[in-house]
Amino acid sequence: MAVSKEQILAALAKVPSPGGAALTDARVLSDVVVTDGKVFFSLTVDALAVKVWEPVRKAAEEAVRAVPGVQSIISLASVAKIVNAGWNEGSLKWRILPRNQQAMAQAVTPIDTATGLLNADGSVMPIMIFLTDHKAETLRTVTDAVKAFAKSHPSPKAKFLLASGTAGVMAATNEVVQAAQFPIVIWVFGAVIALCLITFRSVRATLCIVVPLAVVSYLGYALMVYLNIGLKTSTLPVVALGVGIGVDYGIYLFARLQKALKDGEYFEDAMFVAFKETGSSILFTGLTLAIGVSLWAFSELKFQADMGLLLTFMFLVNMIGALLLLPAMARWLYRHHRRRGEPARPAGAKIPAGVVAGVRVAAPSPEAESPVRGARL
Image (cartoon, rainbow, N blue to C red; front, side):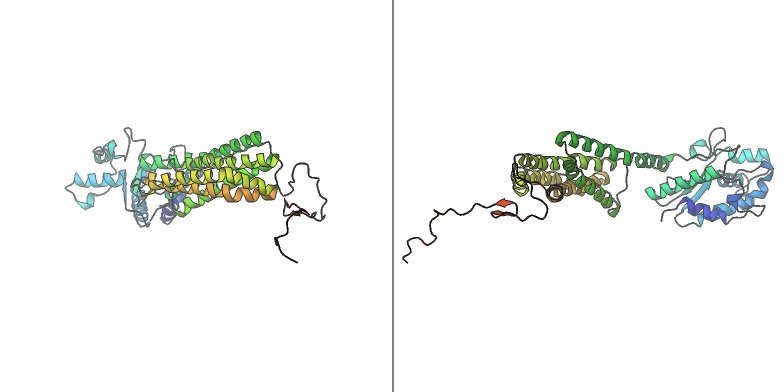
């Protein structure tokens, strides 16, 4: 079970300070950071008040340990107590923080900076809390809570910073990816719209090409949620890649449709020509790309497996959108289309004889042979 910063703060809020206020309101608690499966926080108090605050520190660690998902907690204070007991034959009675400055230095000196519990000059003293997972939701919850706590607890003596480590780097990466997600998609769609307007010089044509891409992109995000595939640096370009390849299908089909319409064909005839010349190519290209990347789904590398599933979906559904949704939208947007040279009929006018559903039927010739040839009357 993932542990969030809110859970840690809620547990610490139940710990009373020596003055009676909640620990989270006593202005001694540092920022709480959950990263790399660990929870970091510290208590900053005056040296003369260490003895008074020691029961509070112990209660805070016990409260955090009781949070579901927390495995263990390590801090400079907890390790220093163990070292102090070691200097006194391991007696549990000496597992305390000494009040004497020299004794405190003796207890802290064996703790190397490589442990991550302090730096060379002692200006950074994190508390590490080990968690059960590094899911993006957990990291985002923790970092948001840390930023909120740092904003609500300003102090001239301490500066609250997000921790590093593997989870810290992952959290920072997730923030960058989340910030870059929508600008990338907006720029991709903006470029596609601009180029379609320049190429076809028609808003209707641009809508017929872009709307199916937008629908498929939204479905791609829904698939990521359904398959529990997080948004990360490896999956960020998938939607943009799907748009870049999927737009080709629409351009192929609509270019032939527009040419046939300009040649004076009825819409149904023009769409038939477009499908006849490009439909099989679109279908073959989409299936070839989808089948090729679908094999990645069987890879043992999660990155490759996720990319295989997402790209297969994008290639197939973009192809289906071009073959089904684009013609439907085009028929609706071009419903008033008429053949070149044919006069426009007023609204409500009856269709002339010989024209059925947009197709002109030739009248029978009087010289046509009788269907009953050689019949004797």
